[in-house]
Amino acid sequence: VNTCLMNSCKRWLEQVKGVSVTTQWLEACIGWIHDEEGRGIPQARLQEMVYQQWLHTDLRDTAPRGCIPQQQQQQGCSISGKFVVQMDLLIDVGAPAYAQLQKAKGKELDCPEEEINTQGGQQHKPTRLLLLSLTDGHEEFQAMEYKPISQLSHAQTPPGTKLVLVGTMVRRLGMLLLSGANMQVLGGQVDRLVESNRQTKILARALNNEGLAEENDDRGG
Image: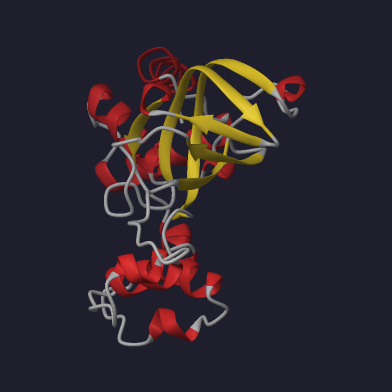
């Protein structure tokens, strides 16, 4: 692969998309695109195809370095900046796993969801509270929405989705606290993670019965 072309593409990713990649991955990616599309592909199209490939590749295979400084990975601190990360897993810890599993599989609950959440004789509807497993390609960490993040959902942000965390964020007890103002969704997914971390599998695992994930689950999560 031409060195000038690679350097140009790398600068475009960094300056336009805010994405850093390893030279080895970029070289392999451009080589694959040339094999598929031919070496006469316009540079603008090549750059966009590289970006789309990045969106659908595990960040562990593309990131040249971790983006969150080590000294900031401590409890009870704030971190500020702009960080590109990958969401490996998304789960709602604010609602019962069984109710979520039945809903994900398109089944009716045996009883209303409010009855499942009866405490002290009073009914209450569960409030969504999303827990995210994230990685910057080198370090893995967890985050939680402390205010609703409309950009996140199981349908629209599958495992492997690339995110940008922006602004000032608080980290408590090892957990990064996020709101919608701290997040931009870039998109993408990673097929391996979609299969291993699909919603029905994670919920069935939480119920200690992984067979529930497969039972009449034609949608695959």
